[in-house]
Length: 439
Image (tube, rainbow, N blue to C red; front, side, top):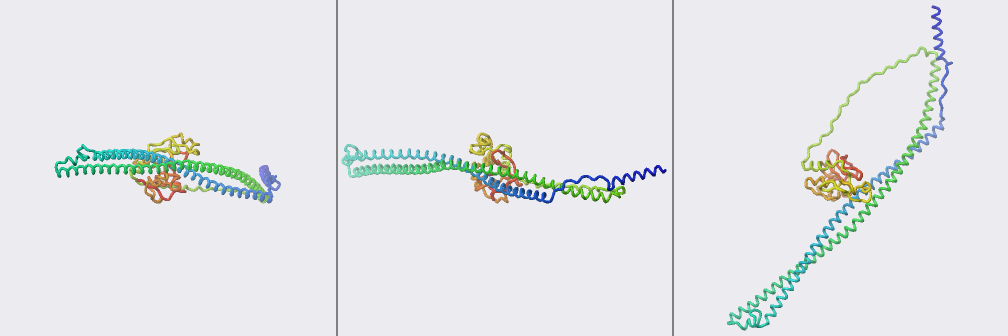
């Protein structure tokens, strides 16, 4: 019994001794000074301000890039328009030339007819003064058997002369009409040649404007990339500066905790063996979440569905500038810029207006291969009243881009070189306030 009591006293003495003031405390952690932490915070503020400046500069550069990208799209469509106009002017000039040549042939034939009629009239007049002929000579009067016969012969001569003069008037009139036709045809040919010459001049000007816009876009893209790289570099420096400050603040907090722990340890050393802490956690029931059903699209007309189905059938077909017609995707054409870098001129695909040409050809609507002309091809309806099958446009006069509205804020489009025909949410930034309704 005595031996057991002695053992308990020794054990309690050991516990108190381990937790008492004589226990070995851990060494204090680093404690950065206020000046050092303040300098670190100033560096963070400076880096953050620089990041803000670069963020603003990048936003401006990207806005400028978007503007130049829209310019490129617009000038590309203008170049496409110039190409379409040039082809039309050449066809008009060829038709006018054929009409002028036909009118010239008619005028020459009329002139020959006048000369022939004049020769016949001259022969008739000459015969009227020669004797020995029944008609057109003096013997026609002298050989009369009676006054009545003489009068009849005079009337016959007059009728023949009048008939010849009338015929002469007719051929003269025909020659005048032929000459007028020839003059009108020549004037039309001259006007058509002027239009073709203007179109010939406009085509390289449009190409030059397109190339200039593409170069400006490329330069702006390089500037935006440089700003983005600079911003990324400064953001890295900002992260490192924040990490340094956070490290010093963490060291300060750790030191403060060390001090607090040391005080608590000293205060509770005598009663450590009698302290116990009990913690309990209460479970909370989960709240079920019920899904919300989305809107259901209403029915649309059969012709609209044919157009939509033809467009959606081309999903995944690549973009090709100048590509597409009423029958489907075609090889694109050179744009001497972005499109060429993606190989549009040797790749089969659609551009935005080419896709619309193919989609609406299924219901007998033949659109021109230029979004600006397609914009004016139907009835204008406010964008807020757009319905499935309407055409959406961007850019001045719809000359930048066109897409087919599917309803529910979605559209199908051939967006740009390097992409493909896709379904996407409507981009309301820059969209024109009116849609074009063809059906």
